[in-house]
Image (cartoon, rainbow over all chains, first blue to last red; front, side, top):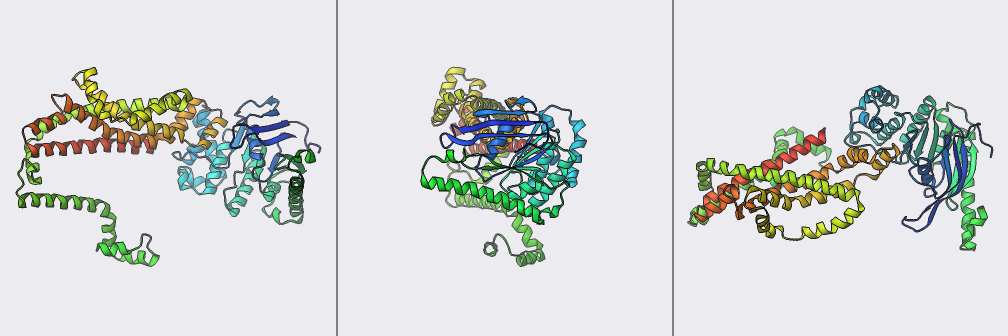
Amino acid sequence: MPVAGHERYIEVTEVSKVYRNGPVEGIEAVSSLSFTLPRGQFVAVLGPSGCGKSTLLMMLGGLEAVTDGQIVVGGEPMTGPRTSIGIMFQDPTLLPWKSALDNVLFPIRVLKQPLDAYRSRARLLLERVGLDGFMHKKPHELSGGMRQRVAICRTLVYDPELLLMDEPFSALDAITRDEMNELLLDLWQQYTKTALFVTHSIREAVFLADRVLVMTRRPATIVEDLTIPFARPRPAGLGESREFNEICGHLRGRIEQVHRRWNEVRAETRAGHTELVG
Amino acid sequence: MTIEYSAVPRIAPPTARLAGKGVPGGLRLRQLRPVILPLATAALMLLVWQITVGALRIPTVILPPPSEIGHELWRALPTLLYHAVPTTLDSLTAFFAASGLGVGLAVAITYSPFLRDMLYPNLVLFQLIPKVALAPLFVVWLGIGSESRVAFAAFVSFFPVVISAAVGFANAETSALRLCRSLTASEWQSFAMVRFPFALPAIFSGMKIAMTMAVIGVIIGEFISAQAGLGFYILYVSSRMETALIFAALLVLCVIGMALFGAVALAEQLVRRS
């Protein structure tokens, strides 16, 4: 599949990850995975839980080392975490003793930047996500959606080039989740960054992304690379359109197809599923 | 009245809550129950004690009535306070030493797997020794001055701090530590900004135990060797069969213990609020 855009901001080449000390010995979480991403694209990595998409994200963020292959971001091979990369985790990971504003300023404190210079930016971000009245509230006084909004602000406050998001809204209810997706698109349009969003929701992936990479379990690799044609800004009602649902249907079919093939192979021979999709 | 309360379910249905609002007096009494009930129980026991001692004609040397203890306490208060000073100071010194040593060791155990494997099993094993039995050793090593009592009290009380601080450091949220790592935080920053604050409640609960243990340690030390202090005073008056004064000294000790414990609890409140 040809790559949209000219510049290769992220290059993932033949990357594999094998957990040697995990609960199960020698589990291959990711196997020979390759793709490139231009700057400024919003990409969703779509796959069922346990397909290694979170592992991929952690490797891109420098929090996990690759077992094989190479990841290059912005021309530099990844060797560890970088301040030019912001990661949003599944849970908001707020410090319970700090107010919303102080949680947003936490990266600034860690990076030893002048707090005063960033305080107005932090306030602005919190206002953007509708938390004007909650800046001095502690996390336990906020709802799940509000906490995740604080986490978004915390990721944006130090202005990283690349945003990595690991199913950040998976713990939220469907309505809040839709709201958060719209908010995220809004923010992304304003602060245009390269973004990689991991999710197991087909609709979420299609709604948010310029491009969807489909990952499957065994093999833990990318089986589809689909460009989403919808223009931006995308209306909230996009999910009701026919084209949107056709794309979702196509992606669902593709995932099921791969899993069906794998199950058939497993039924015939106990080993040997690797040569089938190789 | 009490029967009526227990018949009301914990989570009252809306109608019951509305009805409760009609009788504010009933609600207030229920809110004050945690304060009134233990005080009333204590007062009742004192009353039973007073009456029983009088009715059975128990000699004052064996068991003085509360009124006698109160009287003696008032009479000997200056002496009691004089002896309370070294006990309090030694307890505080031992407590601070135990807290510093405990948190320091916990940090070492948390950050060095080598030290953890080396020290942790031994610490737990050491915990099982009845440490009171070692008190005379401290006199042999450090003499009969306050050093030996402080050292012994610190020795007795530092274990709970190590154990709870180590558990607290280990239980810091891994996701928060991962966040630090993603922000390229140094090991020291992760400790100061995440691990230590997360462990504070555990550290304080260890320190609260340490505070009470430190007082016990000092008293035992004073039993063995001292010329002043409430432990010494208790031994002295008991040799003179002044039982009411033993109880009076115990009462002062209780107040000191509660004040010191309360100070640690207050410090916790202040630290956690800021």
